[in-house]
Image (cartoon, rainbow, N blue to C red):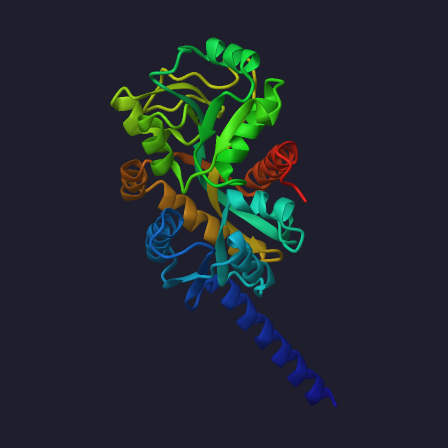
Length: 322
């Protein structure tokens, strides 16, 4: 009996030691990184670049899997259901804060994840055609008040992030969302073609998407919906400077299924932090025109919560929340 007890104790000690070693050695095999968007797009490109840098730090391959569909919900649902062992991580984007408001069947939200880090933010702008009769922010707001529905605005499909940004801005200055007649397009490129042709008067895209129009003098940036000015166009004031402190835009970060052990979260976060501070990554982001913003853990979680509340409110104002 005594020998049996000692043997059991030895086996338990061995199992604990092996388990502890495995935890300390994490990761010991490949990691899967889920992208909810298609291969070749901006979100996919950023994720693959980051994955390549994280591999060097973690010493294991990271396989990016594109799980598309449902406006991102397919990929996020797969991530939320994954085993919380640190071997499945995934990209979270601004649409996570919108889908469940628009489509009742989508139940996944920021609450279903442990936040690792925010990597990118591209704030919306208030941009007008250079040929418009109003030239300043104040003149534009007054024109909208005096001429409800006359201004044609665009940037994306109905319910897209830039449509929501327009609605949030109008609501924040006390105007109804139909103060601007919204012209849906396939995206910012088409919207600015329409602006150049005189079919659209105002756009609400990111600074990066507006940059060419600014540089060629075909459009004027009146405000950026961020907490700080964009360093590439420092003359464009923030909304807070315009008297309305709203922050709206698209963003990208990395999340985990809830319950990943703290030491593994810490290793992943350290690798991600090193990757996003790498000069090669920063050049990649600059070349793509992506804005860099980094928030870790609880700060990122609170950021997603605030984004969910802001975008949900805008969708309600637009009549798109179900």
